Amino acid sequence: MYKVLIFTDLHITEPRARIIGLDPAKRFAEALRHALERHPDAAHVLITGDLTHHGTAAQYAALRGLLDNCPLPVTATLGNHDLRAPYFAAFPEAMRDENGFAQGMLELGPVRLIVLDTLDETGTAPRHGGYLCDKRLGWLRARLQEGGDRPVIIAMHHPPFVTGFDGMDRIRLANDTAFLDLLKEFPQVRHLICGHVHRTISGHVGGLAWTVLKSTCHQMPMLLGKEGTGDSIDEPGAYGVALFHDAGLILHSEDVLSEPAQVSLDDNSA
Ligand SMILES: [Fe+2]
Image (tube, rainbow, N blue to C red; front, top):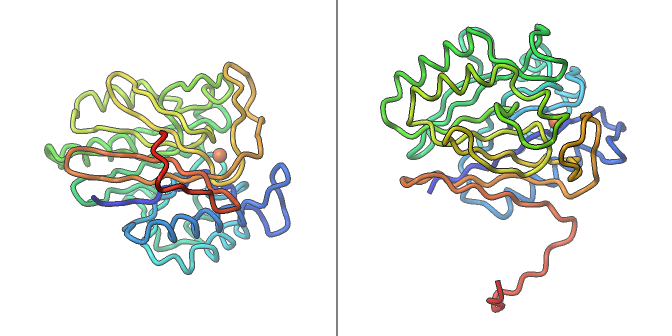
């Protein structure tokens, strides 16, 4: 199996700034350390957007410092709290397509991973919503056409589907229908992995499986149906552990607890 550690919605701030009292940099550092210690066989780190809280140079510099000692290759894309120019200024070596978007394609074991940049800097989508312009959709089509039957997983920040959180659903991928219609032509696409909502959720849309992963920092309270996008709760940060194998994808969500959990290896009561 090919193991990938997936982090999303880091929301890195300047050093002394907090989000609902939480230190995003500390939370991400804890999550990364937690994941690397428990998964020394992991081969790759993927970060699916909202790398920073405001997209400032100082915030990307802070993130760069946090990733400096990461022993694994890191692939990242952007979310609605990011800005493209300062991101690429801080990470000039980062994955970028020929049109300047933070997207690309990786061969990870038996699977082809396509990472999409859904950040809308044009105001086409509602504020904080996501969008895939014609250039990005054209790039995606070309990658899928050249991929043959090899299974494809797509990672992106904004979900192209609803989750039951009404406020967040209004700022999902704005052109979700165009995106999903394109994918219908390519049955080798098996799973979508997203962030944005700050909650672990799974489902399927039009027969295509999807998973939304929790933030490494603040989470969405369980207020289904609620309007607005500003609700946050201090629940543990989390990350995903993806196992890519010949028969498909296994995707775990792991909470980062400040104290080691008590583990009973002999208790089979589950
Ligand atoms: Fe976020």
